[in-house]
Amino acid sequence: MNKSCLDLTVSSAERIHERYVLLRLTDDRPLPEMLPGQFAEVRIDDSPTTFLRRPISINFVDRAANELWLLVATVGDGTRRLARLRPGGKLNCLLPLGNSFTMPASPADKLLLVGGGVGVAPLLFFGQKISEMGAEPTFLLGARSAKDLLQLDEFSRYGRVLVTTEDGSKGQKGFVTNHSVLGTEHFSRISMCGPKPMMMAVARYAKRAGIDCEASLENMMACGLGACLCCVEKTTAGNICVCKEGPVLNINQLTWQL
Image 1: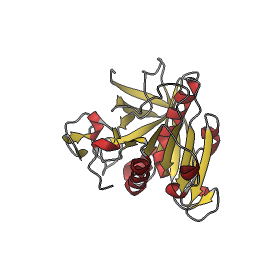
Image 2: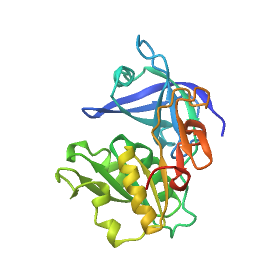
Image 3: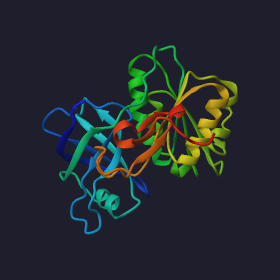
């Protein structure tokens, strides 16, 4: 898939949470083709401390509005500057980068999409693509509390939404691996993105249950092209650059101690 370096225009910058901002970006020309699970490397302008691009998952692509959505977690100076963008501003993006989640083989396949924190971001676009082919994904989304759950209304447009919160303020109390659906239903495949401890716990469950499972890794990625080597992950086939050969990998490729 061809890569593009585009100066996209900010359509809107919506603070959907005290730590998260949803950027909607557009262009005069149709946006390039993108797949769920891929990401963009965005340039941070006017920052004295941020010299490298920041990787941001593709949250959604609205073809009717010609908009790309990026869900940004404000964790450092670079992402805080992204959060200050306003409509009409410009954001330089290198995209699309990386590989994608695995689409179901048929509408009859039951897919479970598991996300935690900002890791829910790539699952929205994936869910929409699954829905387009006539299947209904199940989303299992985890957060610390109800106020930390993101984009629930958007997710509900494309499938069944199940929720866990650590404090029990919404959905079932506990972590995603504590949800009762894992003991009552069998899924064809699990696709996940989120904190590594969460993904390892889900991977253990999937391995015990004999369910095919893939993870979107959140390694630090500075270039997005496999040149800087800061995103290297050890796999069963040797070291790979997650930005180029990932970020989506089957758990059987990983050397996690499960």
